[in-house]
Length: 484
Image (cartoon, rainbow, N blue to C red):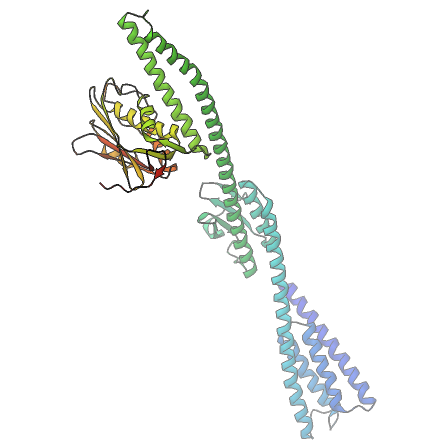
C-alpha cells in the first residue's frame, strides 16, 4: 500500500512537471512570435524550473526540468533552429549560466520546502505537547493519571503501552500478551527519583524523533503528576494529623481543668481531716496522708500536661514579671511529696536578695519537677540539696541528690518527651516522662539554659540558669559581677 502511494505521488509530480514545461514552451513561443529577445525568453524557462521545484519535492525534478528546458531552448530558439547544434558561443554561455542558476534556485527551493515541512512538524509536535501538558494539570488519582498518559501516547503515536510502577502497580493499554522484543522501555521519573517504567509496544518498528519526544514527555508528565498526587495526599494527611493533635490538646486541656477542681477539693478535705482531733487512729491518718499525696501527684501531672499542651500549641505561655528567687524556691519546695519528711533536704541561698524577670509559676514548676525527680530516685533518708548562686548577671539553680544518677544511655535524651528511667526506688510512682521536657522548654523560653551531669561521688546534678539582677536594700536593682 505504501509503495503504491509512493508511485502515485511520483506520477503526480511528473504530471505537474510536464504541465509546467508545456506551459513554459507555449509562453516562449508566443514571446518569440512577438519579437522578444531569446535572452528574455530564457527567463521564462527559469521561472518554469522554479515552479517545478516548488510544486514537487526532491532535487531530481528540478534537475530534469532544467535539462529539458535547456534542450528545448537550444532546439527552438538558437541558430541553427530545430537542431541541437550551437553555432554562437554566446548561446553556449547563456545556457551554461542558465543551468547553474537553475541548479542553485532548485536547491534553495527544495531546502526551503524541507525547512517548511520541519517547521510544520515541530509546530504540530509542540501543539500536541502543549495539549498533553494541559490535560495533565487537572487530572487526579493515580489510575486516571496513568490512563491519560496511555491515551495520549496512543492518540499521538498510534502505539499502545504498559505502565509499571515501583509499588507493583501495573496498568496496561492493551489486553494482548507481549514479549521483551515487542517493546521499548522509558523511565518514569518524578521530582527526585524514578518511580516506574513505561513499555511502548512498537513491535520493533522503531520511533521517529517526534514520537520519541512525545513518549518521553508523557512519561515525565506522568511522573510529575504522580509526585504531585503523592504530595497532595501527604499534605492532607498532615492536615488530619495537625487537626487530630489540636483536638487531642484541647481534650487534654479540658480534662486537666476538670480534674483540678475535684483534686483541690480532695486535698483540702484531707488537710482538714489531718488537722482535726477527731481522727486519732494512726492507720486512718496514714490513709488520709496517702490520699492527699496521691491527689498532689495527680495535680502535678495535670499541671505538666497543661504546660506541655501550651508549649506544643505554640501559644505564648510565659508571662514574665520581677520575682524574688527565695520566694519561688519556698513555694516550690512545699509542693514536693516526701521532700522534707522523708529526705534530708537542704537549701543554700545567697545573702543578697536576687530578683529575676520570670514567670514565677512556671519556674516553680521547673523546680518542683526536678525535686520530685530527685525524690523518686533517692532512697529513704537520702540527701537532696538545692543551691542558688548569682554570677555574671545570672542566677544558677543547682539541685543535687545522692541517688544512682542518670544512666549513660539516657543522658543525651533525658530532656526529651516521654523519657523516664527505671523505677527501682520504693517511692517511685508512675510518670509519663514530661517533667524534664517541660523544664527544658520553660528555661529556654526564659532565655536560660539547663543541663544534667552525674556527680563523681554518686547521684545526679541538674543545673539551670536565668538572667537576673541583685536587689538593693532600698528596693532598687543594680547589676553586679560576682566572681567564684
